Amino acid sequence: MTQSLALTYLEEHYDRFQGDLIDLLRIPSISNDPAYKNEMDKAANWLANKLRSMGINNVEILPTAGHSVVYGEWLNGGASAPTVLIYGHYDVQSPEPVDDWKSKPFEPVIRDENLYARGASDMKGQTLAAVNAVEAIVKSENLPINIKFLIEGEEEIGSKHLNDFLIAHREKLACDFSLNTDAGGMPDAETPSICYSLRGGVGFKLEIYGPSQDIHSGEYGGVIQNPIHVLSKLIADLHDEHGHVTLPGFYDKVRKIDEEEHAELSKLPFDEAFLLKHSGAPALWGEPEFIPAERIGARPTLEVVLFQAGQPKTAIPAKAVAGFSFRLVPDQDPNEVHRQFRQYLETNLPPTVTWDLQFFIGNPAVITNRKSPEVIAMKNALQIIFGKEPIFQRSGGGIGAVLMFKEILGVDSVLTGFSLYDDNFHGPNEKLHLPTWKKGMAALVHFFHNLVN
Image 1: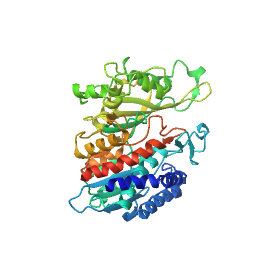
Image 2 (image 1 turned 180 degrees about the horizontal axis):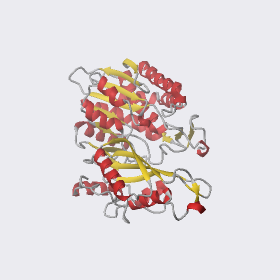
Image 3 (image 1 turned 135 degrees about the vertical axis):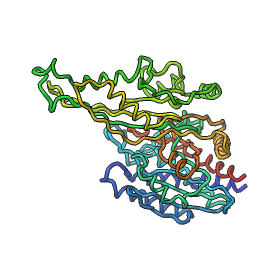
Image 4 (image 1 turned 90 degrees about the horizontal axis):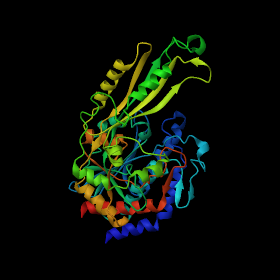
């Protein structure tokens, strides 16, 4: 079977693949800092050269108003063959706090079968898993399939120019579906995962203003209300004692979880013990009528992710600032949540302060068909390599590209990945479990074969 030739190729070239990943991880492609623009360009060029070297055609580094997109195609199947658009991103988060790393974030180190570096799992390792699987096929067989690559450089800053890019290149990017390996979340190295729903999100920055400047707490305490107190009470009142969000109308459009899906989510390993182990928290919190897996993926949430106020002096501050992150589920509208939040502030903030609410990017949730042919192809491929059926889960996070592909290209995404829950995305000591990564590449070879068999 030609399939075995591709798997043999993976095995024979694994050391080189690992070395390639280490080389890419050495490039500090931090998209949110203009000081790293040259490094971003270097990473894009590295990927373009990688695609060219393995026989991908029409490789281009296409500009956007921000960082470039790497494109390439291998159209080996003709018009009647399935066309897969492989998505990835080469940008990474900043490594701060650097002092918390056990090794330097851009000097990859292998410890106990884990490769430690910023971007190892999110998502340079996941991107190269797909790239290497395609290389194994291109170099060893003649599979009748069409593959396109879109590897962007702005995922970590909200893919803010991807929408315009997709509109401009809609014809070039035409496909049957997208493969996205950025939605991993395997609970352990033995349990593969397919994600079928991503929560949406909307973010706000709220500034509460009191006096025109910081003022002495002795002279004015008791007559001027402290913005910290006002903001603290507002935050406290946004949830009831059971963790429900108190915005009027917030849950009106939330899709109910039916008995079948509840039964499936109940089987997932994301129970209390698992979540406490991986979070380090002393106890769980949240809506008691829903199991943890439902609270994470099927219920909307509101979190305060920033609080700034005061100085180490005895003064009432002039202002207090908070950042809010809402995670939304299917059928909720980010713009409607914006209206609900603004109305809540108008009703509940006292006349002793003034305020300003900034509305940042908002995206609705995404839910896909778990029984589509391409999802079944992935399910079977993962089962062959990992020896057990993959779990189907809802992700608590979101991926902007998935929604944009749906809205602009009209295609769904197959969402999988080979990261583990303890890979420390965005945190110190990010890692990639290399044996799982190796299995992932083999599973992707099977996946591409399943699409044409």
